[in-house]
Each structure stands twice: as C-alpha cells, then as structure tokens.
Amino acid sequence: MIIFIAAVALVVLALVLILANLLSFTGSVLLGNVLMTIGLGMPVVYFTTFFASLRKEVLRHGLKRPQLVYTLELTHREQEIISQVRTLYQAQHRIPCTACRYCVDGCPAGIPIPDVFAAMNAHLQQEEGAAGQYAAFENNASACVGCGQCEAICPQQLHIRSLLQEVEKAFA
Image (cartoon, rainbow, N blue to C red; front, side):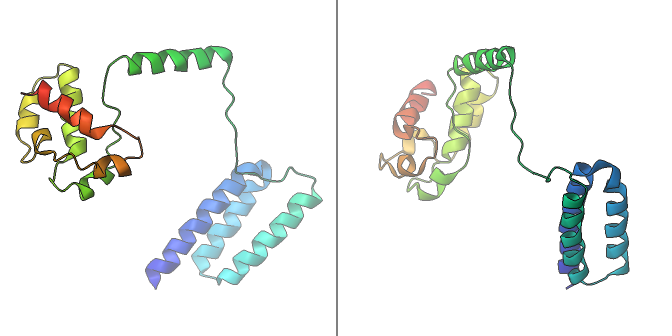
C-alpha cells in the first residue's frame, strides 16, 4: 500500500512540475502547495479539487491553456545536415536491425538473430573480434532452416533469411 501511495505521489508531483513550469510565476506557489500536500499525506480528493481550481485560475487570468504537445520545426540547414547524416549512415552497409528480438522467440533453430547481425555489422566495420563473437554462438546463421517466421514478425521488414545467408558467407 505504501508503494502505491508513493507511486501516486510521484506521478502527481511530475504533473505538478510540468504545470509549474508552464505557469511560470505562479509555479512556485503551486509546487509548494503540492509538496506540502504530499508531505501531510492528505487524501487524493484534495488533489482533484486543487487541479480543478487551477484550471479556473488559468482561465480567470487569461493565461494560455497549458499544452503538453510540442512541435519541432527545423531550419532548412538543419534538415540538410540530417539528410547528410542519414546518407552517411546508410552508406555504411550495415544490417538495420534494431535488436527488438521479436524474431528470436519464433526461431525453431534458436538463432540469436540480432546478435548474429551485430557480429556481422562489427565485421562490416572491420572491428577486431567480430569473427570470434560470431563463432561463440551455439546456433549461428548456418543453422537457419528457412522457415520465414522471423521475417513475418520483423517490424523492420528485413529479409532475414537472405541476410543470414550473407552472414554465413562472410564468416565461412
């Protein structure tokens, strides 16, 4: 029960900190009231009442309604830089596996596919130890039975079977 109360208090405190930041000059008063309320252990009902009155105060003072959604607008130059970085990254010929591991549970051969791809990426970057890393796997790319279960679940839509064949050739 104590853990639950502490969790609720932390969530409420986080919300209050956000609101205090948005309301600037009245934020310190707001933060003080909430910290005092948490410290005294008053019921959650007081929080509900407090936030309802806060909404009324925001409207009464004609303040902008607090919003937690922001958009990031990049300049043309910033967009160019991102495009250049993307091009450089894609030119590395890396396997774009995010290591989500969705493919691992369904693999009947028990291949740790993301780890195999990580070893291949290390090999492509000419890192020392990539071959040893690959050799340490109990089931590596050569164990693939070609069932395709991994490809069906891959959120990156990678052609895992053909990539595993490439990995097998690279480390043969």
